[in-house]
Length: 120
Image (cartoon, rainbow, N blue to C red; front, top):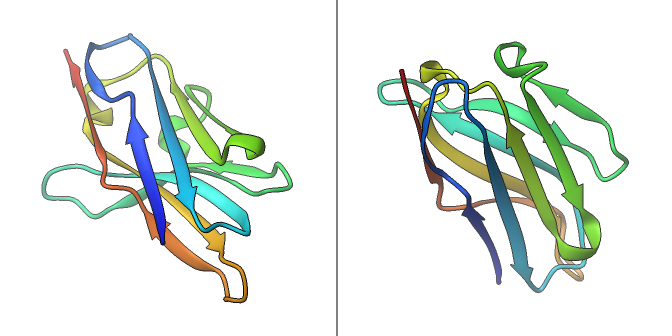
């Protein structure tokens, strides 16, 4: 079984910063891409940033230059550093990882989400 657990969300004023973390645990053989998604009330879940095991990243246009994704492969952890936060960044942030378990094909796993609220 595999679990993804996010942390680091909270309430911050506009212009502030937060750092999200997501740790994957369980019977993991390897992890391919890891990423962050977010879902605001009444909106669809959207990609925020993703990072391959080889270090290639991509970002949503709305967060480029403000957010940075990174990962520690030894710790099966992905981070999202969020700077210059705006009220429109308010959402539940979810971690997703493409995980290979021994003897199985890779599959996507999701965390439970962490709330980020940016006040104006």
